[in-house]
Image 1: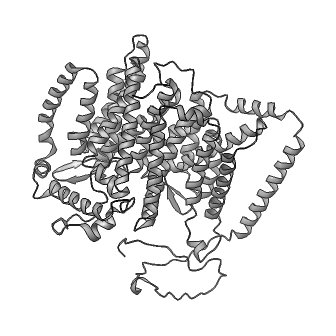
Image 2: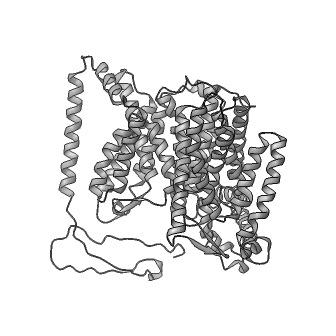
Image 3: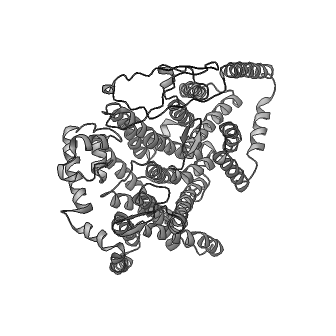
Length: 615
């Protein structure tokens, strides 16, 4: 099996007590499937419980329908509006504390039943403030490799929150239609159909429809995890005016990201290994794109899109950026703790490297180099003479965060981040302030480079400048193999996450045999090309052009202050993405995709709010 996969097969369920005999015969795989082990366990027979719960659900729906029919002539719209105002009455700090408590209780709940029960209060906390749910998603994204065990599998907290935020959009849209006696649109009907299908999939996970056959082997989790967020996105845009979107300066960025989703889906369906391709499409492209949609629509949903001075960012944008920075700082602190007080680090090429919860120090560096420029820009260029007290309080919080992030970033010893990503971001920040500061920054980087290069380790430096052995040698061979792969799959590529299986099977050069398990070509252009074909590169260029047209125009028209500095930091983070992407990942990881869509959505929202036309 080239994938070296393991599979659990349920032989029988709900057997009576006593002796039973199972005969296992290999079928397929040249009769060479190894049996790793077997186990017998006693589990509760939940079939009767499932039927009872289904009947109870029907009774609840009938009762609710009868109640609404009885109250149809009464002034219940005012009652619903009053209930909504009361539910959303607590201020943001109180709601945030309550949300954090319920989220932590769900994440650390020891049992499945308690975890499922805690989803209800967690959803109720998100319902009045879906913007805080989005902020919590971007905070938790760096920890996507520390998932929550649930229903016999593991799931990232960000995925759970994305589904709950989507349900909040669906419920809020239905509430609005009911309270206004408004007829549902076609998008509303599609929303409810998708919500029903997603709910059926969730029930199939809890109460499997069969013990054997394709119904037992089907991955029912895809229905709630993919259809419910889509339903939320449709609910979010159901009330949008298409004429306004056509006039929006950010429509090109929206369309480009939509094209990326469509292309990734088509490429996944055409991939040689459709299973792993569709998984990456789901957790990377699909989820991140829907996260982008929710950010784009959440302020419209809550009626907070206007009324903010042009020199400030909206409250939602501030919450999202601060949550991203807080999550990156938390990961940096966690990585430092593991580095200094545990054995959770790796030693390679003569240096001891921090990696946090990631499998590679380079992946930690990819996250931190996107957060560091934002913190630097806010601290260096976010001064406002009228808010000295606010600045002092802000500095007290952001300066230690920057120190933690930079220290953890340095301890990754990532050459891509330290020699490409961060220098490019710093040069961009300096260039935005004029030639004098740019010259000072170039001199400072040269001095720092002379000081830190010896600290990277002699062996690590030697492999950087040697092309007949070491990292540089394998990187050149990898790029040659990627070009050969692109020649064979020019139009749609090999599909998301299919590079590894094609590379080590057909395209690895003989003298590169020592590193067979490379899952991407370590270059953003080749990465998009081999995953999505030449069209993928074109879509990536389209996204970048749309982003920079909007961001640069917006930056030139903003007044000095915290908002302008934040935008500058986001642009510098994008520069780091492109620079480090020349030799590593740029987009196709869960955290990188979410952070990228966060940057794009905030720029698009601020442009639309100010009605700044791109040039």
